[in-house]
Length: 171
Image (cartoon, rainbow, N blue to C red):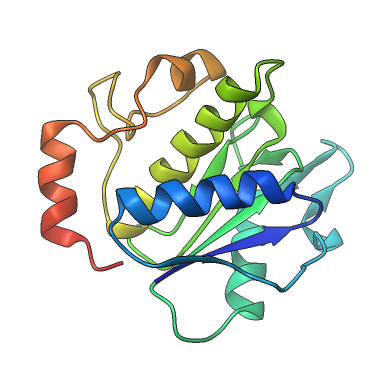
């Protein structure tokens, strides 16, 4: 089972969209948590005006316990990791916890925005299963250095990553 956990102010439509497609893609039960978590202020870096993604992952690990295989945190704040200007998300690889941010995925076309969110969610959940970044630019596991990379890649796994996913997947 995969739990989608909103952190901060995340639109219900985004959460339900993710629930629908993640359950199909990973062939598992997926639920949206009723628990509303505030964005932890200790993850905020005022010098960068961003939130440290690893601290948000640790926050999830400390707050959420229970019967689940994976937790996908979804937030609307700008995330960063050391030595990077920003990140779209971060995950334990392999592990149970992942987080994505919708902040840099915005687009005036709602369909494009939701597709970006889905791609990043699939990508980070792929990491939790142990998948590494892929060299195929159309694979969902390709590293997105910019939003252009996210737009170019597919929401699907390439043949090699899909084979690895099927070997490892225990969602």
